[in-house]
Length: 95
Image 1 (cartoon, rainbow, N blue to C red):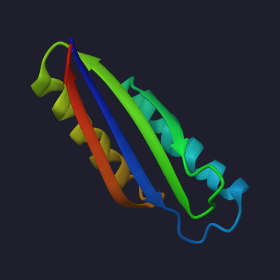
Image 2: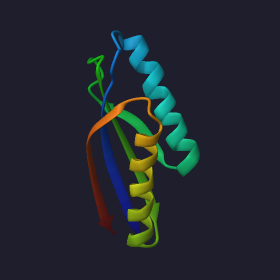
Image 3: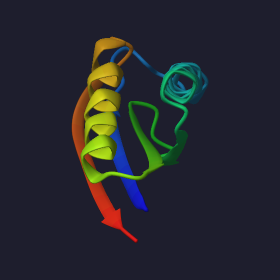
Image 4: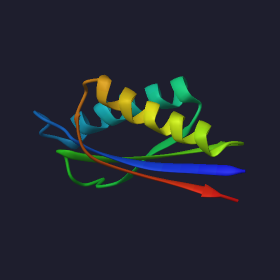
């Protein structure tokens, strides 16, 4: 079994309230969950209105497949255009 985890840190331009941040984060999380069938959630920076930290996890049989899917998640998150990605992290664990 192979487990892939990742974190995406976004900069939210023109977002001046936590309510506006929630709207953007909810949209990103929902789209990634629906498209990739992955576990996705906001995992940090909850009290900062101009930054968002979204984490996700995947499980698969092959390391290459999990790595490919993580790359596709990063690419889709960027292509959504809802926020600027300023950092990404990923880790793949063989169990």
